[in-house]
Image 1 (cartoon, rainbow, N blue to C red):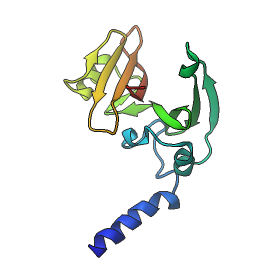
Image 2 (image 1 turned 60 degrees about the horizontal axis):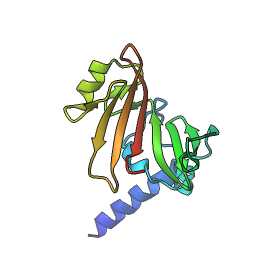
Image 3 (image 1 turned 120 degrees about the vertical axis):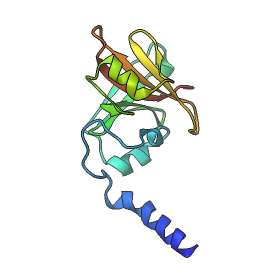
Image 4 (image 1 turned 90 degrees about the vertical axis):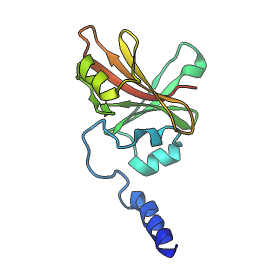
Length: 150
């Protein structure tokens, strides 16, 4: 039992020792689902100050977001929590991949919705979905992971 506690304590301290983690290709994050719901404090402690911050105006006032841009992705914040991530790659799909490759990577649960693919994700603390936006030629133009109940 003591070893398990010590092992857990060491794992818990690792992010503080190396906030940005190992170098990654921009837009890639291992286990991005764990970043949804992160507070601003948590975001800053994991990745440090963002490279850029900008706002996006929604149709309704409650749809306004502030976006924190990091090499790992774009973190969309409403209030004080991350509700959406814009990624360069997720679940085996990369921006630039053709529709067929994205569908193959996402598996049978992926839903084709015309100019985007949608993959509902289960097992988290709230409902989430992965959305793959496609251009007219069927290439992936954007990848978003988001709370689908938001």
